[in-house]
Amino acid sequence: MEIVSNLIEKYKENSYMNDKLTHYLINLPSFMQSIEEHHIKKNQQLQELTDKKEIYIKEFLANHAIFYIPQTELFIEYIDSNYTILSDDDIAHYVLSELTDNDLKIWKYKIKKNIIKRLKENLFTTSIPDVTTIKSVFQSLTMFNSKNHIKYFLTVLGDCILGKKDTFVYFIDSSYKKLIRKCTEQIYAMTNKSVIDNFKYKFWDHKYDQCRMISGKCPEIYKFPSKILNMISVATHLSTKYTNAEGFLSQCTDEKFIEKTLFLNMNTPENIITMFIDETMHKTGTTSYKDFYFLWRSYLKQKELPLIISDTNFKTLLTTLNLYKDDMLPFTSKQLYIQNVKLFLEKYPDLEDQYDISELVDIYNKSQEFKITEDMLRDIIILL
Image (cartoon, rainbow, N blue to C red; front, side, top):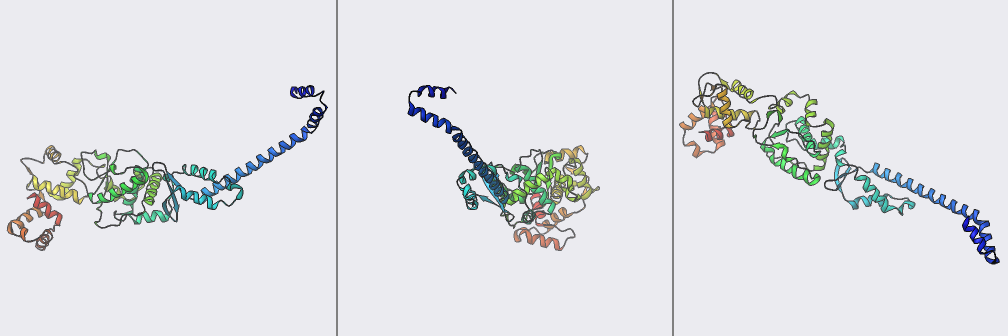
């Protein structure tokens, strides 16, 4: 090499330096071999540590069911069939307390950082709850009519949380408003996702084919589900399992549940009015529109439906069906309680001042074949 040649030329007259150069050149092969061996050994040790680190990280991830919600930057741990929030410090404690290999301890912060990076790829919405968790969530939602109602409600929630866009509107009785509001607040706090817009309590000219009914009434006293993360996990799991809420309906074998849920989807306003007349009216005599409309609203309540046709549209439809003329309709009620209640209140005009609604209902029902409820009496008094 030119460098060596230059050195030889430089020190050819200097015996001391020439001897040193000769010595180094003679020993250079063994010196280079030593450097090479040290380099190989160092790389082998580094590879062994890297392999150990990877094994530890994999074992850590396998032994800890920890998930991540990117929208709120929350870590969630699944342990003993319950999901709980986990802090960065908790994860660091796990990592450092379980790291017993002395060789790896020099990399403890690097390992913690690597584990957190991997955990952030493990999304909470992909977690699969076990049977115990699912059962506990179902038991916390007994305010719904049946297991299918619970499954359907949760699947709808899961669709909302996962951002599955659809055009469906889910009608639910206003007695569930408090439950829906609290669910919405807690789900938003955990996931930054709002679910309230999909649930409706009143009908505003929605298209029937986009309407789905969640029937039933929420009891006044109930225990709100305390483990919201469990509910979110079960909801997203069901949404994934069935693809979406429509997928659940397609697999459900409960015909009565399907019929109630898809009632508006399977009918037209004209069909429903016809059903109402067939089920509640005799096609003889006449009834005033005011009484007929009251019976219509009572029918909707009985069917657990919202007011699905406005007063104006209702009159228009009755006119189109040749049923409405001069504020009268050619029917009489199969249950004559409206007229009976009118006569009862006219006969005893002072009762309203002397008794409350529940007492009036008791007095009336003792002497009548067709029984009424407090809500019915209130509606009739307003009607009168």
